[in-house]
Image (cartoon, rainbow, N blue to C red; front, side):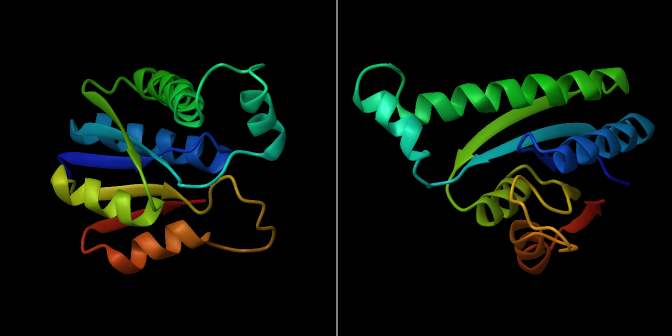
Length: 147
């Protein structure tokens, strides 16, 4: 039924739980799994930006965020491999997370988008974060929200 699963990853605990569920489904249905990380167009914390400005940190903002994305992919891939997922791809995009998640799902002909209820933001008491809610509203593709 679902041959191409897209799971949005950001390194949060919610994201890790979404990867686990996505990997279980991918294994059961022999589906391909696409791990997607979107780099937001937001400034770095001022402390990190100061380190870049003074030369203490040599990488650019984008290089730092891409390195972080690779670590997120490594962790997510490890979870997927533990669930014996055969086909795993990863992709980094830049921009508005919800818009990019929907565009990637459409571009890769995903049958299902899987996300955590929220990401790295600290929204205590909220059922669903703004990115998850926006993806559910924008997408014509089935969405699975993992608590």
